[in-house]
Amino acid sequence: MKILVINAGSSSLKYQLIDMEDEHVIAKGNCERIGIDGKITHKTSDGKEVAVDVAFPTHKEAFLKLMELLTTGDCAVISNISEIDAVGHRVVHGGEKFFQSVVVNDEILKEIEELSELAPLHNPANVQAIKACTEVVGKKVPQVVVFDTAFHQTMPAKAYISGMPYEYYEKYHVRKYGFHGTSHRFVSGRLGELLGGLEGKKVVTCHLGNGSSISAIKDGKVMDTTMGFTPLDGIIMGTRSGAVDNSIVSYVAEKEGLSWSEMNSILNKKSGFLGISGVSSDCRDLEIAASEGNERAQLALDKVVYQIRQYVGGYAAAMGGLDAVVFTGGIGENSAAVRYNVCKDMEFLGLEVCEEACKNASRKEAKFSTENSKVQAWVLPTNEELLIARDTKALVK
Ligand code: ADP
Image 1 (cartoon, rainbow, N blue to C red):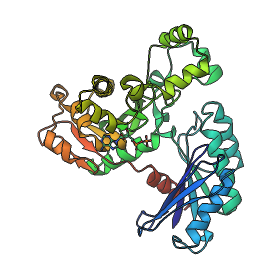
Image 2 (image 1 turned 45 degrees about the vertical axis):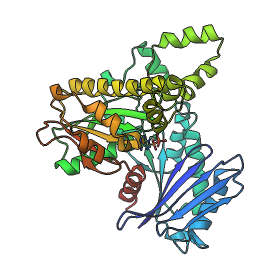
Image 3 (image 1 turned 180 degrees about the vertical axis):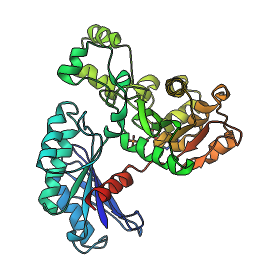
Image 4 (image 1 turned 120 degrees about the vertical axis):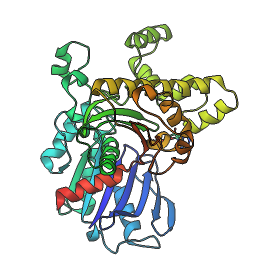
């Protein structure tokens, strides 16, 4: 069975064709600058690669081109579109309605569209992609949607309700939803395989990338997570502020004469690593700048480590214990310094890590807690596309 996995944004469309026999990626690529001009990069598992500029007025032209590259020319991996058995789409927001993946039909598509109010930048693009995909592959090929928010739907009300008047929850659905659910589910599921199940286990999963979130997972179910109503909440990220005292927002907006949308843009695009350091939104750049003596780059790194430690400790308290901490995402998988600084001096929690093992754990599945440590520390590389493909296979079978 071959499954095409789609991760669409408003101007991009990333794809992977996965052979479910052995779960290997046959080909993958990215259509960029949709609605602007257009470029596609396409790679096959046997090392062939092509990059072409091509006009992508809408997502439909991007689908047509990726299908052409999958089926014809040097980089072809299948002879006909009909070899694609199903398509799995990543959808950002499933609101309170979707707590698991579902097969797409007109009703589901309408509901995803209605949730656009909660994710105005993402859900409309996801809907456009699903519609364009249907036009290109036809209605006979089943499509499945996998929601970023779904895994977090097990949170209890005390975790998801905001401190504002309850009527805003009732009127506007204002609450914590959480994001990166597919990644938290993938790595916690993998940990379950390694530990022989998650029943009775209390786990903190740290997805640290350009966007970052941390989840408390008890018995395999999310109890709490750091992202909230939007992916702006929680810890500092590449360009996002994470949680700040809300009064700062109106105070600074007034001082600087900023509109709501200008302030929103500062909180989302000019804050976090970039805003604090003034150097970069990229963790690698900060680590280099800090090693050269840049104090603000060091401050941004110190701040993110401090916040992650606060959540590890806070979630351990909330769950009444801790069995494992998992690191994933670009920073979690690659930065030994962030991992080590988060986990060191945590013996009071039963977590003891080995610095050398932590260094060697980068870019692969590895445990870096000591043999005596009661709490295990792991690097578990995430694979959201594979989880989308697995859900798709399970639902269309
Ligand atoms: P996204 O959230 O966009 O998927 P990624 O998960 O790829 O992003 O994470 C990107 C982040 O990972 C960047 O901050 C980048 O600097 C960081 N990163 C990647 N490789 C390393 C590395 N070797 N050391 C430290 N940070 C790294």
